[in-house]
Length: 311
Image (tube, rainbow, N blue to C red; front, top):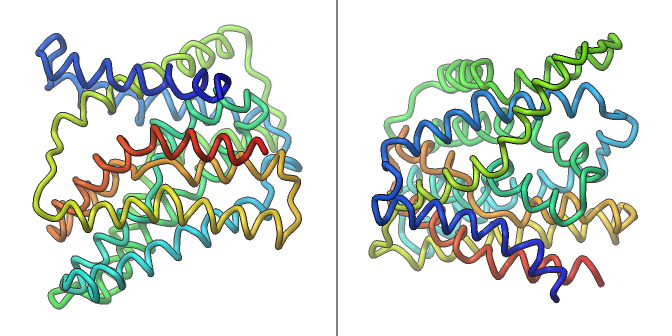
């Protein structure tokens, strides 16, 4: 138990510090967006580039881990959307937005720090192989489903075009893609280049966690917190449970390796769920509350998963 607390407490302590600093005006709220932009657009792409450049693809891209992760994610999208429509009486577009919040994982701001502290550097190549597909695939699927179901939806080809543009503009994907190319062609960086990437990568964890904590000040619970709680349960419980069942009992992945993907699946909802909801103006409050509830509840959920995965 103390080992689990040693993993969880420092990560969430930095998130709490960011939240309290902004809450009590010790850090300017307008600076939070800059921190998150720095992490997503500069520091994390450097981290991903360095990881892909030095990874052993034979072990990093394990499809027996990647596929179950995304099966669990897509199940959460489908089931979350259906529950939002049938149980909570949402319109179809609002249902898809809720399902997207149940599906989209905070892989970067919380996932990387937690997995790294729990299982060390050896877990990161597997984590990065999942992240490589995360935003491009899930945002594209989410946009396509939204355009198909909402009454005022645009033609599917327009959704594909918008999704493709978002993928091309995603700095995380650029970091992964360039790192993969460098690996394939045997690129070796000089010492200053390696030092630059190492320094930028070191900035990811504290900056991301502090910025996320500060960003939580923008979210408030509203009347639909019960629906957000239901979506959070998909993200924190059902998604990782599906991933574990498919990886270990079905595909016979070594539990010592499968736990990297399962723990990543247990991370809370990412901020992109809020961005997705505001882009379509569908179920924005549900997405906002799901980010807030799942992030707070992940303190307990991640601790439980760490314990279960250590058995």
